[in-house]
Amino acid sequence: MSREQTTKQYDAKKGIAFGAFAGFIGGIAFAGVIMGLSPLLHLPTGVFLDALGLLVIPNAVQDAVLIGTTAFAIILIQGIVVGIIFGIVTSKSSRLHLSSKRKGVALGLATGIIAFIVIYIPMIYSVFPTLLSQAVASYPESQLSMFGLSNYTLTVNRNAYQEATLGLGIISYLVYGFIMGGIATLEYSVYHFVINQRKEENATKGAIGKSQ
Image (cartoon, rainbow, N blue to C red; front, side):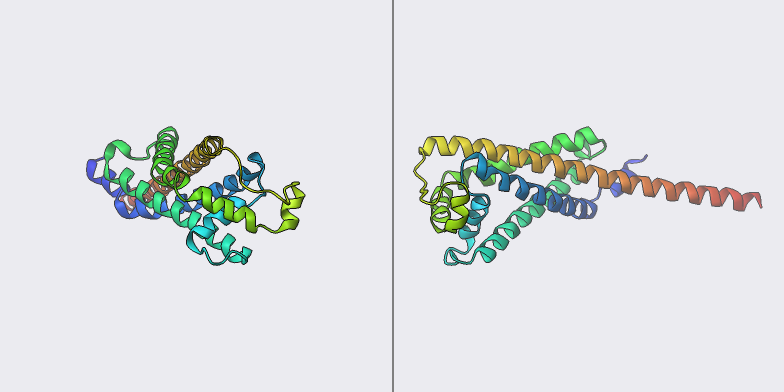
C-alpha cells in the first residue's frame, strides 16, 4: 500500500468520526463504572453522578432527574471530545495509526491515563469533595436508608477519600480507554475490510470485462 493510500485510509475526517463514536461508547461504559464506585466507598449508588451534576447546575439540588441527566451528558461529552482528539492524533501520525487491536487498545489506555491526569485529578483535589458532601446531604433519605446511611455525612478522612477516589478513577478511565481504543480500531478494521472487498470486486469485474 502506498503512502498516499495509507494517508487516505487514516485521514482526519475518519479519525474524528470513528473517534467520536468510540468515545461515545466508552463514555457509556465510563458512566457504568462510575455508578459502581459509590457502593465501594459505602455511599449511595448514583451519588457521584449527583455530585458531577451539581458541578454544572448547583441550584438544582432537589431535581434528581435533571442532575442525573446533566451528569450523564457531561460524561458522554467528555468521552466524545476525548475520542475526537484521540481520532485526530492517531490519524495524523503514521506511527500512531490504529493498524492492530493491540496497538489500538494500548493507545486507548494511554489516552485514558492522560485524561485521568488532566481532567479527573484536578477535579478530585479541588471542587469534588465539597460537591460530594452536598450530594450526600441532599440525597433522598429513603435511598440512603437502603444502605443504612440515613444520617450519613461525609466525614471520612480527606486522604483516605482521595486515595480511594483516585484509585477508582484510574480504573474508570482505563476501562474507558480500553473500550474507546478497541472500538476505534474495530471501526478502522471494518472500514478497511469493506474497501478491500470493493477493490477485489472491481478487479474481478474488470478482469471479466477484459475477457469478454
